[in-house]
Amino acid sequence: QELNLFLTRVSCNPTNSRKNPTFLQITLSPQTIISIMKLVLCFALFAGAIAEIEFVDEPESIGLGIIPALNDKNECRIIAATQGEMLVCTSDMGYLTALDSVPTGSLLSRLWVFDDVPKEGVKGDTGVAFSEASNTIIYGTTIGEGDSRICKIHALSATSDIDIQWSSESLDGGCSGAPVISSSGNYVFVTHNYNTTGTFTILDASTGKVFWQQEDEIQPLSPPGIYHNPLFGNYQGGENNDNDIVIYANKPFDEEVGVGNAGLYSFQFPIAFTGTDTDGLSVTTMRGLDGDAAWQAITAPTITDGGRRMYWGVTKSQIRGWPWLDDRDSFDRTAAEALGFERAERPLPKSQPIYAKVATTSDLDNEIILTGSAKNEFTALNRNFDKLWNLTLSSPVLHEAQVSPDNSVVYFVEKEGIAYAYNIADGTKLWDLPLGVGEGDKGYTQSLDGGTLYFALKKGVTAYKVAISDTLSDQVSPTLAPVVPPTLAPVVSPTLAPVAPPTPTLVPITPAPVEPTFAPTTSAPITPAPVVPTEAPVTAAPVTAKPVDSTSGAGVASIAQLLTLVIATALVNML
Image (cartoon, rainbow, N blue to C red; front, side, top):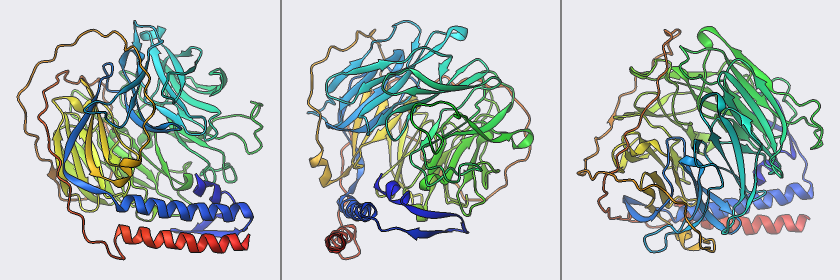
C-alpha cells in the first residue's frame, strides 16, 4: 500500500523504453519522504521475516476445523483482520464460517457461522473478498434454480463475534465468482449472470444497495479482477487515471458450442469522481474479440506491477499475457504473449477454459507465472512465456496455486486429491501429500507468514505445517466467542485404503505456437467423486538451516535493518 502511495506521488512517463520504465520527476515532499521511510522499514521487516523460514521435508497435520460441506466453487482465505489473522471459508448452502487460524490442541476453533440465508435451493458458489480499510468480509450466494436464480451479496465485520452488516437486494441471475472491494472499502464490484445476459454491478459497501450497474445482453460475464490504485489505466483513455481498475471478460454460457461472443472490459471511476454522482460512469470495452482471436474465461485475471501487467487462463486451454515489456502491451491491444496447452478430452469440449486463476511470484524483476491447463498440465513461465518447467499430472488443477512469501516454493492440488510442493526456480518436487480421492476440487490457502497450508476437504479444513518461522509465535489469535453451529445432515463416508500418489512427469520443453483455429464443441460439466478417505498421520522434519553469513536472508535482514536506521535518521534530519 505504501508503495502504491509513493508511486502515485511521482510522475511516470507512460511511453517508456522497452523493459525500462522512466520516472521523469520525483518531488520530495514531506509525504513522499515519509513514504520512502516506511518502504525501507517494510523491506527490513520483510527481509527479517523471510530469513527465518525453514521449509519442512514433509508437511505435518496440525489441526482440523469443522465447517459445513463445501462445493468446488467454495474457498477458504486467510485475512489480516484488525483482531488478528483469521481463516474464513464459504460453504455450500450459503454458509460462511470464521475460524481461528492457529490450532488449539488439534482443532481450529470456530469463531462463528453465518447462516442467515434460506436453507432450500441456496448455493454458496463464490469465494471471499476482504477489505482491510473497513475490516469487512464480502461473499455471495446464489438462490434458486434456472430462470428463478438470484444473486445476493453479504457483508460481515471481521471480528471474533458475528457482526452482520448487510445483505444486498436480489440481483438477477447467479453470482459469477467472488466479488471484489475497492481500496477505500466504499464499493463492492460483482458480476452476475442470467441465462445469456451478464451484469456488472457496483454496490454501496455501507448499505449493500445498488450504486450503478451495466448489462451485457448477449453473453455472461467472468468473475472480476481488481488492482488497487494503479499507476494509470493501461488502455487508451485511462492514461492519467489512478483509481482502482476492475477487469472482466465474457464467459461461456451453459451448453454453449465453441467460443461465442467475447470481449474484454474495464471499469474505473472517473478522475474527478466525487463519490456520489453516477453521471459519466461507464464500462470501457477495451477489446471486442471475434473469429479465431476470440477467447473467454471462467476466472478473474491476475494483474500485477502497478496495474500494467495482466495474465489470464482462457478458453481452448490457452494463457494470454500483457507483460508490459513496453508501452505497446496495453490491455486494449491483442495480448503480446499467448501459449496453448494440451486441450481437454471428451466428454469435455475442446474449448474448455483453464480452470484455475493464474498465480505469479511477487518479484517483478524476475516474475514467474504459474498456471494449470484445461487438461492435466502445470507450468512455470517467464514474462516472455518461455516454459521454465512443465509437469504432467493425473488430473487438472482447479484452484489458484499458492506461492511462498519468499517466492521459492509453489503449492498446488490436482483434482484427484494430491497436494504438491515444487521448487519454483528449477521445478524440483519437494513433497506430495495424498488428501483423499477427489479432494482436489475445493480451495486451499496459506498463512500470511507462509508457515501453514489450509486445505478445504469434505470433513472440514485441515491445517498442515509446511515451514517453521519465528513469526508464527507472534501471531495474534482472535478472542473466541461461543457459537451454535448450524444443524447439518449427517454424511457417511466410506473408508478407503491409502493410495500412493502418482509422481508427476517432468516433461522436456518443446515450445509450440498456439493453434490458429479450432472446431466448436459442446460444453459439459465436471462431476467430482464424493469420497473421503482416512488420512495417515504425517511427521514433519525441518530442513537444517545453513550458517548465516552476509549474503544469507538473515544477513540481508541485518543489513536492511541497519540501513533503515541510517536512512531514517538522515531523512528525519532533512525534514
